[in-house]
Amino acid sequence: MIPFCRHILSNGLRVLHHYDASTRMTALNVLYDVGSKDESPERTGFAHLFEHLMFGGSVNIPDFDTPLQKAGGENNAWTSNDVTNYYTVAPTHNIETAFWLESDRMLSLAFSPESLAVQKQVVIEEFKQRNLNQPYGDAFLLLRPMAYRVHPYRWPVIGKNVSHIADASLDEVKQFFFAHYAPNNAILCISGSLPFGRAVALCEKWFAPIPRREIARRDLPQEPVQTEARRQTVERAVPLDAIFKAYHMVDRRHPDYQGYDALSDILASGRSSRLYRRLVIEKKLFTEIDCSITGDIEPGLFLLKAKLSPGVSLEQGDEAIEEELRRVQEQTLEKRELDKVVNRFESNDLFSNLHYLNKATNLAYYELLGGAENIDKEVDRYKKLTPGDLQRIASTLFVPENSSTLWYKSVSAPQGATMKNF
Image (cartoon, rainbow, N blue to C red; front, side, top):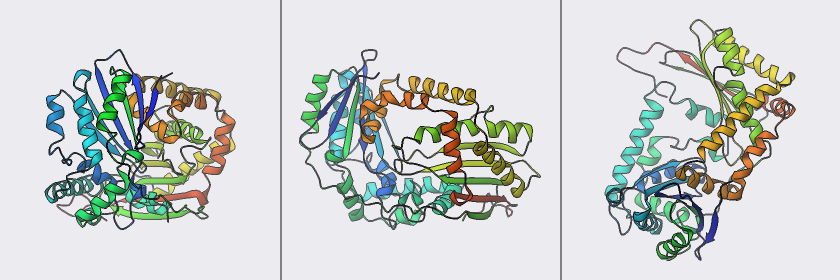
């Protein structure tokens, strides 16, 4: 069990506190309830852009990193479809520096044209490097809009294309900030050797003066039930043919969520998993195969990706995958397969919650999901799963009309080219 205290400021900022006497450090994790799903279809990639802008200077502090480094601290951030998360770590005796820095960028950014220009270029180069200039990099740029037709999950976190960031104006950026980055749209979790009373006093000093803001109303279009299989084939200058599949699944709060997660591990997580053992090791149809879930708060995707062995056709590979998925639908899994996955999750969960920073991040996320106290119930949800639960899930998940399949066909690159961009 992870003990914590909760304190809510008058401006709506939710504060969680976990005391950890085993360290001389303290972490501040600020989770903003804004992700790529909150963007306009004509201006995607803004949440990820702000992951960078928040380090480019705030209203009273031109340089975020230098004061923190002088205090012996470090920081980082990440963005998802659903949230943007920032953390700052420093020795406990210098932790007020982190409160000062985090509160000032929650109050307002500097919004200078120079900072925007620099961070736009950083994001554009990241987009090109990750999605355009490496093998298979555009696969999920293609697969997401196949699976989603109306929901904003149809574009990736980094955005649809670079023009949405390149053409973004300073006024648009300001509007996005003040519509989402506010104390009443954030969760601050403090974990480490800072006592609760001192933590509350610092929160009141640095965060309480920040005014509440009117948060943009979230009215997401609901994705219609998919009623037919979707397919697409593309040609790229990549080493091997590949198959990417997406199946619609439940949302993060659904009682079956843990079952989908466990099923993905049973099928293709490690050399002893079903698909790897049968299709890579025994039949040698693929060089690698993997399953995962997107883990989104809204209804997400169950993903499968595989690279074919030389000489194996896309048709052969796809049929072999479908055969194995039918097997899971028709035959009950062995209890030992499920036990192995559940035991591994329990071990990973234990180790992930040992470090004070991980506890700060995880508590904040569970608070967003409905209550930080639920972090202690997650392992039990996995332990309650039965082979019958997973067969029931597979029977509704792996049906043709619920699938989107991308065939990624290898072709020779033109002389001097590395890959063919879409």
